[in-house]
Image (cartoon, rainbow, N blue to C red; front, side, top):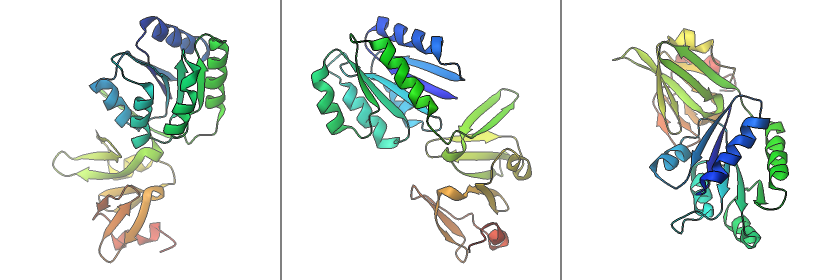
Length: 233
């Protein structure tokens, strides 16, 4: 699944972008439209659990720039793609100079539909770690990229598992044994009540019983009993 985040202060432009995506993007998708930089957009940016393609108008209302939105994105997310759209090509150099990794810069009145479709198609063809944890039970439905999951631990009070990502926590009614069947080989049990994403570990200390993740987070959920899950130790 890919999520499209469209940001433009022109309601007509937002409607047109959404129409184009509905018309030619056949894979599972979600489209969210924003006409201003508000708390909801900032919350969306902070959630890096799913793949996103941002389409940003470079000049928004109330003297807000799409470049400033892109900077907010790159503070927490270097994976998602950013496409700028504009009426003014003189902003091209400024955007590329101040924002890391821009996919493209499209002028609204120069073969826009053709270039937009070409860009989106090219992005969707790229190799991407899109394997996901998929879970559905009762009123709970989750889709989380494996790469976004840091670790999973048991909440003894609620008797549920808590899936921890960089920015969120999700609770599911599964056992440690059951949830392992939902995961791929990057996940190993490291404690009687914890599973960790090996690719996100930066440091392991079996003597002290902790691991450090690539975001600097330190957790005392590492047991010598599960050292065999880490063959290089």
